[in-house]
Image 1 (cartoon, rainbow, N blue to C red):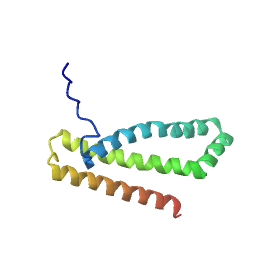
Image 2: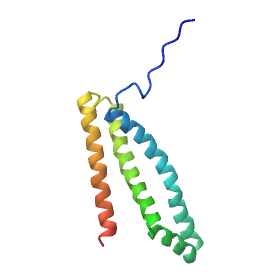
Image 3: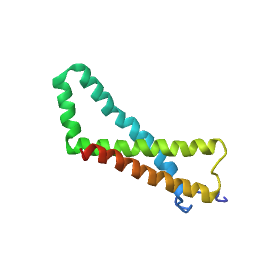
Image 4: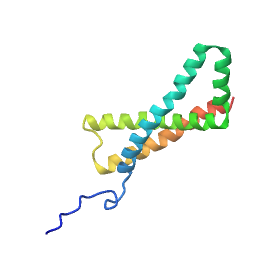
Length: 125
């Protein structure tokens, strides 16, 4: 019996920035979905009264809450910016290897800058 060839998989391909960013785009989509639960908690707490909202605010102000909010903001900026990159691809721009790599780097840098500006505004009152 003759063996069938194996399909290529991630262990065969050399990782590229485009591959990593595609996987990260999906992961940030999931993170945003999960992180939205905290937004729902905030809105429900606000609707239920001051005591309930104070409980939410205490959690959001804790180290755990701040880490979750920081991660959610990174995911939000990355997913939005990379979504714009995908939109450009949808209309036929940026498919060249050099351009795709450069636009990925721009998305990563812009994500870091936008996140830093947001959190500096929050923490540097």
